[in-house]
Length: 204
Image 1 (cartoon, rainbow, N blue to C red):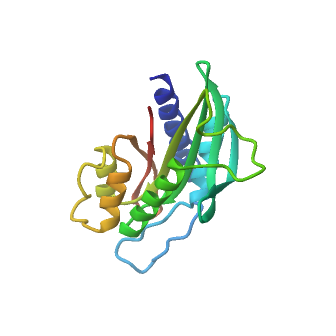
Image 2 (cartoon, rainbow, N blue to C red):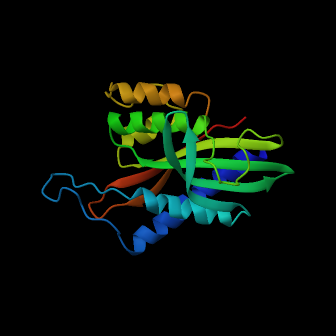
């Protein structure tokens, strides 16, 4: 499907630009400089920023921190992209996270559930995600420096990564079952450790 290629281009474009930016200047501190292996974490806002640029370059209007209205809860979506794709109005709702452990996996699973039931708060005039003529695509992205997590994600989340058996990974695999998954190399930290951009989208 053409929209799948567009999303693939968006994620790869963002990954390439993040890689170029971090090769020029590293923007975060090493969180444990005394460890044998010092890892770094790219902030979620940086990923969202570059995804915004990539969507906008493809003709989408992009909105950040869009408020949601859910039964018993309120929240925001990190980014919403709205555009026309082959005569169909496409709305992409995306949450960005960092993924290194079971807690993060569980959080992404919760985000996915929230996105899948997305309703905009009163006053928001973006297209109704479930309105006629609208294709709503929930999506999540995450960064990781864990090779086994990147491999697990790229393989379609078929089994918990490595020896990880935390409930969060099982919940995430269940939540994202049937989605299209991408795992793209983005950067190498000053400590010499690779980082990946992970993404998943619920395509029809």
